[in-house]
Length: 311
Ligand code: UDP
Image (cartoon, rainbow, N blue to C red; front, side, top):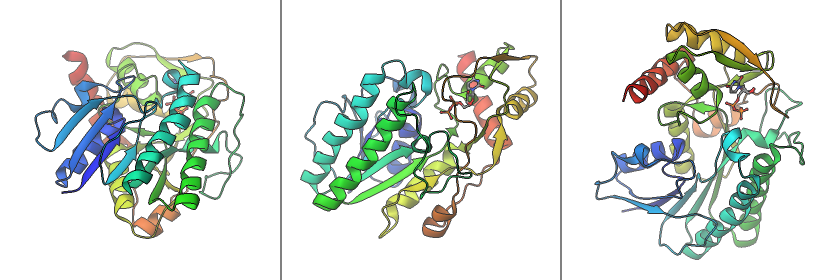
């Protein structure tokens, strides 16, 4: 039976990935320091004989025998990764290095969750994998953006020097159940505000764009990437349907039948003006493209937060 280690396994994406691998009859070791991850996300998995949770920080080396390592351990929302930027950088460099050493010792697959943030505030649109990006390396987002960029560099140097089995994906904005209520990201903020009939906080004029991928589509892409032969990536995984933030706000108000009003707040520093993945590579190499429409995914996510808030 294949044994996989999922770091950040109690987080939003990690917890869905744990579930997906258990469904494939793998043995899953979920490692998380619970900095932004939550035991609530994995409560249904605890008790499954093939599932084990270890509270651990990847910045501290760990010896563990596994066949595959999925590195999803890093705070990913701007408010969380900027809360302790040096820790974010450390996690991306030291943490990733520790796990790459482990992959080398075990001769196990190393699967890195990278991000669209490596493209920064992009000057090319949509972004394809060949674009080197436009990152302010001394700005407030750099701890995450540059952290994730150097993590990719480490991965590829381990690949070149030690020939490790490597896969790298770049995840674009993803949403769905198991996001934290106080995650700070746009979808969870707007939904929680709408359910509570509080003001919807649009940053800037709301003309900036993002493209939102529902979690089940992302997980499908991750599994396809993990199974693909002779393909290292990096590969973009995201939904290319692009929306203005102001459109998203209105959509969430309508879908949740909320009485909330839209208010405008300052745009955070270095907030990218637009973002949209070019997914031709994923489509061609993985035969993958997202299926869930934004309205459908939002309805599911609104229901999830309603249940959570009522609880
Ligand atoms: N945003 C917003 N209101 C919020 C939270 C976010 O208008 O309450 C905007 C934010 O400025 C950005 C976009 O929504 O332009 C997406 O932000 P998020 O933090 O979700 O992710 P990012 O793609 O910036 O990492």
